[in-house]
Image 1 (cartoon, rainbow over the protein chains, first blue to last red):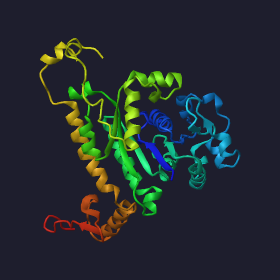
Image 2 (image 1 turned 180 degrees about the vertical axis):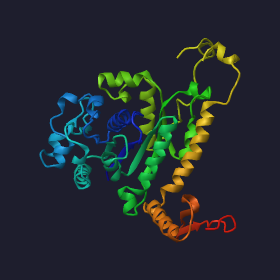
Image 3 (image 1 turned 90 degrees about the horizontal axis):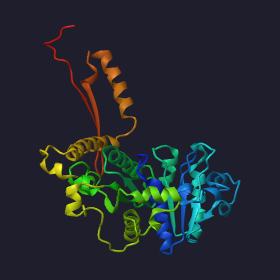
Image 4 (image 1 turned 30 degrees about the vertical axis):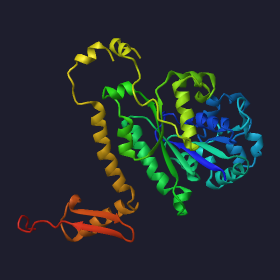
Length: 269
Length: 88
């Protein structure tokens, strides 16, 4: 049975699209047929992060409205044939999505794919609501920063009350914490909330910590999900996250400051 | 982090301030999260009715909603004005 994963946060700019692209690619590379959907109608960006922006012909809204078949709109990833991308519409507004239409497209995707990753827009409006409504699992992307933690908590409230599983009294959505843009050295200096601080507040199962990393911008510059940069810390962090999600035991990394004594002493980033 | 940081006088870290503020805020927001959406309107209308008969202020009334496994409780508190202090 296919599982629907929503990547959500409430707050913008915390790394939802980066995370959606990375984990979708990670799941596909592990051999699972995976689809990743951009729910940010009017402000699509997943296509750019995945490097398929020039191959978009039809989009999610076209499929919902019956203007295109699902397989006409799906873009097969150039790096991994197990991965397909369903881009958002750039010209419509977010009211173009309907609960019935989204449900219909997800049901059709479930026949062909093992994992369906829903990249939520920021906010709690219609696009964000529909991205999480049908989810089985939620990846809550949070930065160690007050506004992001607060917004994540708000999203957790919505996941528990406004989702299909909540409304139909089914087993609740499984929620996971992905703490991104983490700087162990700043945590050590008392300038940044630690993993433990954030977990104390949100009480979520930690799937992984993604360190603040230059590789994320490099990856988006070139349109390749950062998980394909296997040498990078962020790429490895996402690979760990995918493995943990699939049930592998992996010790947590990137939580402690690993810099050497001399580099600390003379200060460098 | 540089050599100078080691000699800096330690002060309350901004992260611990952030954590404390968040804990208070999140606890408050969670407690109001499960309340029915009609509660503020109910409170406003009840206050209007009570003010027809009794001279009470905006903060004289509190409506709280609690939920446990098998029952929901709506608690209404009205603080009446002190009779000795006021003679209208």
